[in-house]
Length: 155
Image (cartoon, rainbow, N blue to C red; front, side, top):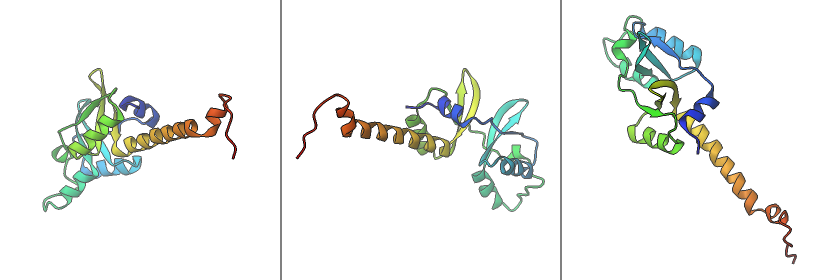
């Protein structure tokens, strides 16, 4: 079963970050430019929060919310959920479902090495299931047994 670190290697994408003093509009622009649904927020080279599409939707209903002047650091989510790089797909899926989240930071040796979305993990899960099904079909098919030299019963 694949791990968080293996999925990140296949994903082959750097973490997209924004400074906490930038505006919401800047964050949305950066997310659109990178075709992503979440952006990590940094202060002094430290990841201190995350801003997601959900955060934007929740804040849009606030009467005082202005994406052109409001600062991302004032609206980001600061409770960061993380998983070790050797965490299995199964455990990560449990975290997504149990915590009602869509993004998890991946950590190795105390350093964040990437961000996984629920879509990344779902894609990896489906590829793994497809591989397993093909392997089982190969074993269940006659070719597998014919290669052993067993005679096939003909009716």
